[in-house]
Amino acid sequence: MSASADSAIDPPFDAAAARQTVLERIAGAARKAGRDPGEIALVAVSKQQPDGRIDAVLAAGQRLFGENRVQEAQARWPKRRRVHPDLHLRLIGPLQTNKAPDAVALFDAIDSLDREKLARALADAAQKAGRCPDILIQVNTGAEPQKAGVLPQDADAFIQIARETFALPVRGLMCIPPVNEEPAMHFALLAKIAARNGLAELSMGMSGDYETAVRFGATQVRVGSALFGARA
Image (tube, rainbow, N blue to C red; front, side, top):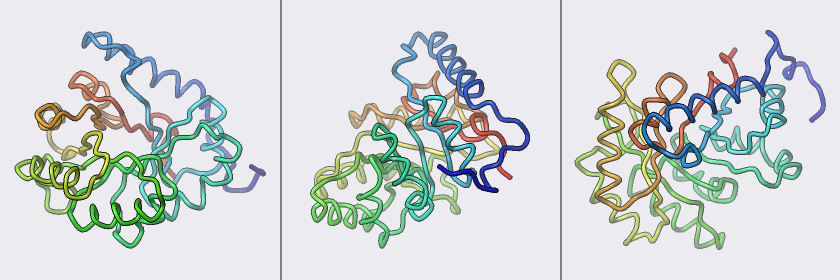
């Protein structure tokens, strides 16, 4: 990537040190919970980050990234993917049905399936593309009206529909707990729903609570500010 004004890093930013700190904290939380640290993947949340920070984190060895918007990811990743063919991209933000074909083409996983209309759109796009990303279903564990996600009481039925009606490769669940509530109970709820549906992947935990998420079984933690620093 060529240098540009928006890639200037101020204040000084040590991507390798930041990443190592996060990985060590994940490993420490895993060992305390009697888990293998290798079971937990670090998803670098790169939304709205400047080019310089993205490239610094790439240079530090990070290859798993999460994006919130299809259009932003389309502008950011194709050229970098040619340089780093081992990149793995996950869509972690809400997805509009009309963006389903673009999401299927770009992402290795879509972690925010939350409604039947979107399940149908993803299935149609996957059939046309001849490929389908892995799918996680987002559960609105706090039943917050402003937040996307299937309500906990509807999760079992929706998982069945996604798997059986639309033949989507549902690998697990994702949640974003309410900001003003203890996250542990939400992580425990998500793990319980996953277990009874035979789902192995749990995407839960962000910069402020990922160690708690590891304790409750997270297989992926989504870290932004603790890895990249605060957004401008």
